[in-house]
Length: 259
Image (cartoon, rainbow, N blue to C red; front, side, top):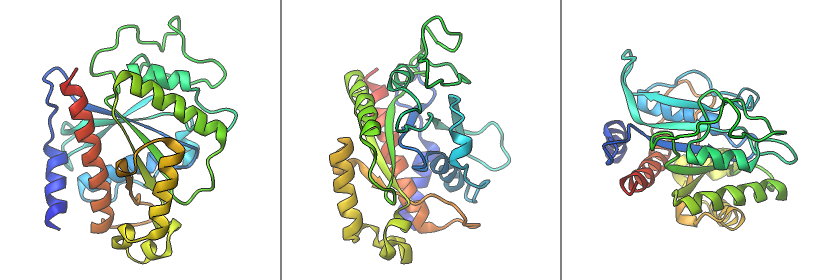
């Protein structure tokens, strides 16, 4: 448990290395049903030490509103928030879904809180949802691809969008990583015991396939299991989530220190 406790302390006490920035902004993107909203809820559960409200379903999260999710650090203290925030954008889908142009504007901080993404017309500077002068806080500091280890092949059109987004982030120097969700459903050994995650040949192969498909190096792809139907906190679930979260914070902090 010790290393778990140290990771938890680290993410709770983290403060950005750049004085002008209040929090590291983590943008999650990925195909339909990959578990982006569930990951945000799971982080909240880990930080607060209890399973918080049931995970959002993809129906709710595909409403396509640009929202910032803050994580409350202490139970009963409404003012205590961690120094990292999540943004979740509309799912990438075959045919419709969010346009990669809108995600590129999001990376630069041009999308205002509460803006409703419209797949048929990308955001333009004339739109009231457009932020013409984004601050360093509005910009995205780390880009995280969320993929389900249990899903079928990702359609080519979605892979193309993901490649566009990654390229835009690379041009801006924004660091990138990925998380693989639903590892328990993807592999019977891991379902039996989450500690088997790094021994599973099936998941090793999944990571290789993800890396080839989305272009994120294998050592930047982290396996996680989101909280779904559990009522109590589980140490093995927490360990994987904290491991991925700590990496997100470190990558984001490296980026903002150079801003």
